[in-house]
Length: 350
Image (cartoon, rainbow, N blue to C red; front, side, top):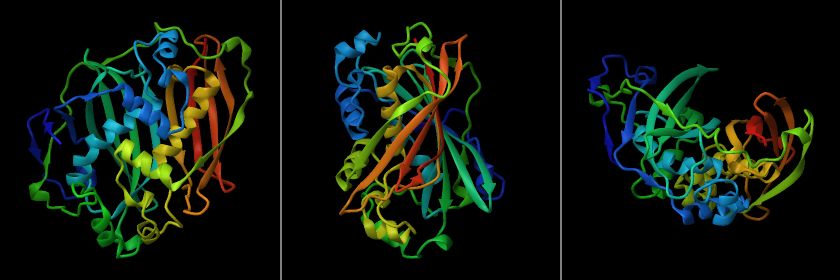
């Protein structure tokens, strides 16, 4: 991965605690080209069959210049961009557990977009003795406008909390060029780069009429129809390949159990992608979403014999007649347990 420091580097004089590295920032030199077939690949991986992701005519009818990327598609360039952060900045952990995710869609991403990705270690906070680490990714288009912002929060898990054989097991099965569980904490080798000052231009999608269902037909408390999604081990492997997520807890049962999990589990991003597809199908316009926030509370085990199942439901929490927008609460359950502790989606209606 290539990167260009955006300001004069300053060596941290603080103790090697992760808090001293908050604000670490870089921007990738190269851009990510959003391809039509990659959009379709990702839509298939998250079981999102809204026509705007598949048919140029359907996307054009909603006012887009090309196929629309599913809301969580940005996890692909973010995954590649974040590797350096997890290999050389956020170090000392044996694995990570995703706990929260926020997607801010300033304008929908479409086929043909050239995205430049920024990476920033935006916060570290301690809760119940554990470190919650938030990484912020911003995607900027060829016009220099920010089109998408992602905030990903993970909990770092050390060898004290899992089987000591986890580290060696992961290193044996991880892809040959991935080293995201680095333990190199040498403070004298660490160089901090920070976000440069300057104007940030945010893309504005307000000029495109929403293709979502009519605001006038909605009421607070309205319920979305139930939807059941099934996941197999093949679905997990396919998603990992499409999204670039090589973590073996999603495909190697022995590693998952060493990490303290009951079985191989679905990717958090995959469950969120399924949730976004569920709401897009109901609303009618995946590009009408402005914000999607999820707090993960339980994992979704996917057994070799029976796979995994998620039941999605939702209801309208609030409506704003001035902006003709609303907030939808999304509920996801697997095996009777809530997968999402709290999940909301902000939508512009027509």
